[in-house]
Length: 344
Image (tube, rainbow, N blue to C red; front, side):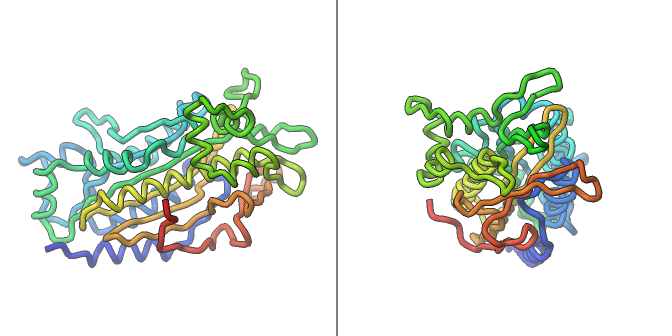
C-alpha cells in the first residue's frame, strides 16, 4: 500500500518557497539554485536512483527497501545551432547529471526533442515516452514492493530561446537577434518564431504549428503591433517565445494526467534560453507539479496583451542590464498559483 505522507510533505515545502519568474539569470543560478533546488526538495529524505547500476537486481544495485525515487528527465528546446553547444553542455552538467537516467557507461539518457521554435510539437507524446521509459515493469515492481513511500519522479523542462543583441543604438538592446559568435553577423533568433510572425507561410508546417500554439489573437497582436518597453525596445520575440514555452508545458501536463499512476510525480518548468553571442542566460517563466491528479502551476500567462517588460541592472553592475518580463500587475516573485489547467 502506497504511503503518500513523505512526498506530499515535500511538495508542500516546494510550493512554500517563492520563485522569481520572468527575469534573466545566469545559467547556474537558474538550473541549480532554482530548478535543481526544487527537484532536490521533492526527493529530500529519499534514496535518489538515476544510475542504471542502481537498478541491477544483484549486489551492485540499490537497496529497494529504503524509501527510493527513480528519476528521469525530458528536455525540449529549439534545434537552432545558436541554441545548442554551450547551453546544452551546461544544462547536462547542472540538471542532466543529477536527474536524468545515467547509462551503464555514465552517459546521460534523457528524452531530447528539438522542434523548430522549441516548446513541444506533441506534449502528449513527450509525456508518454518519458513516463514509459522511466522504468520497466520488473524495476517498477521492485521499487513499489520495496518500500511504501517509494515513487517515480518525471522531470520536464520545456524551453524556447530568443537572441538579445545588447549593443543596439543609444544603448537600447535589440531583442530577437543574436550574433551566434563574435565573428558572426546578428541574425533572427528564434528564427522559426520570428519568421512565423513576420513572413507567415501557410505551406510551412512549423509556421502552422507555432501560429496555432500562440493562438490567433496573440498571433495578430504580435505580428502586427508587437510588444515594446517604455523606452521603445521591441520585446515581441521574447513574449512569443514565452508563450510557446508555456503552452508546451500545459500540453505536456494534460498528457501526464493520463500517464502517471498513483506513485508518479511530475515536476515541470517552462523557460527561455537567452542567446547573446559569446554567452547565454536563462529566464524561467513557469513551474508546475502534478501528483495524484492534483496540479499546481505558477508562471507568466498566455495572453500577449497583458505583457510588459523592462531592462534592469543586475546587482550593483549598472552595465549588466537584464530583461524582466511582467504579466499584468503581479510581482515576479509573487505570481498566483493555479490548481487547474487551461482547457485544450
